[in-house]
Length: 311
Image: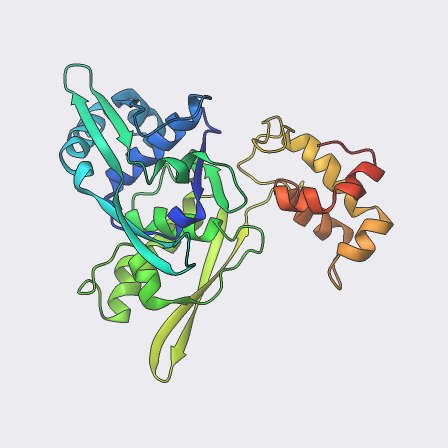
């Protein structure tokens, strides 16, 4: 249960929306349930979330779980999000506005919420193509700021490089779901939104994050984030079970660690892939993350085959 994955297309990661904490938590639970079916879902699929699921994952009491489900039944249907989409024939970019759910039902006597995702959402949480972000649900289960959950997702989309590009401040505010009139003063924005989110992420998740401000003249116009994964003395993520099978490779963390070591200490591979001044140990740690990326595996398949490593 602790390794349930949330998977979102990066279109959804970069979308603009404002969901309250309980609504975000229920959406994430619904995404996990959609993947748990093992058969895929459609725009007609009805996903059931029990109050017990909410209690278990978010460590709240029964009253809080019942309240979250009831409030979602009242409000979640009205929630919208927007994202950019390329027009099929012209290549021009348009902005799509859509709902999260097309249908929602709450059975009070059973404390069950039944969710049906909208047609726009379904492909963004089920297809496994190159541009998606995944993370364990437990990483955000202790976050109590709705902005912290959104910021964590935005950062994790850049996990492989450990830093974001400079994000335009107005774009960033939209991603967090802020209205133009909310926290307009930068010091208020940092005090109420940004810094509490960073603090929660650094306290409760598997990464440590920092940010840097960029100015256009005297006005702050952009933010860049850097972050690193928390590692134990073996160089493995502190929150990963070495015997847990990776969703994309079918290998355990222990097996992936073995493969990373083999590649790092292979002179042919290391001579072309290692960065200037990088130690074998540092290269091994970097490869451990890269080996869960399908693009990396495809690009370096000949090296893996040469070393007798089969993914």
